[in-house]
Image 1 (cartoon, rainbow, N blue to C red):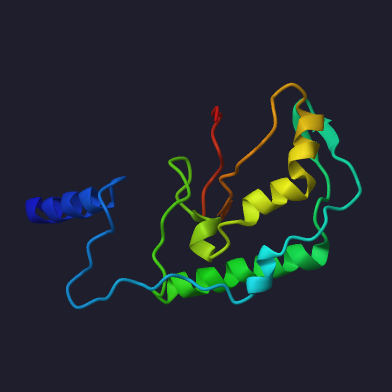
Image 2 (image 1 turned 90 degrees about the horizontal axis):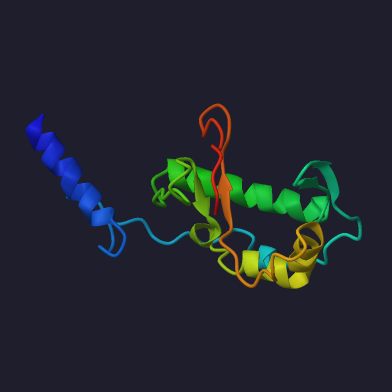
Length: 158
């Protein structure tokens, strides 16, 4: 048991922020970076003309992206999950609040969040939350909720 805890502590120490890459297990190579099967996803379409509807105080909903494009994004997420299950990519949760998911850069789509802001998402957020200042950068990620994923997201402040 103590030996297992020492190995776990060493493995965790190797994954700590700023500690460099996780150690490679003996006889097993580090997974390669994931390459998206649909590299065209990085070309973000124009946002749809419809507005956002406030469905509860401070909670908005509305279609921003064409269904065809969001379907392609979902297919890319499925390809990434399959690569994860095959051990071709390493799982790294997107933040400290989620266990099941990944930042978009792990899917080879690092610029996607910033491109969505530039295409009009930042302007829509300013309309929904006036006086908060312009959004100039993003931290975009996917999360799996429900069976086989996270149960929910607790109240938090970003």
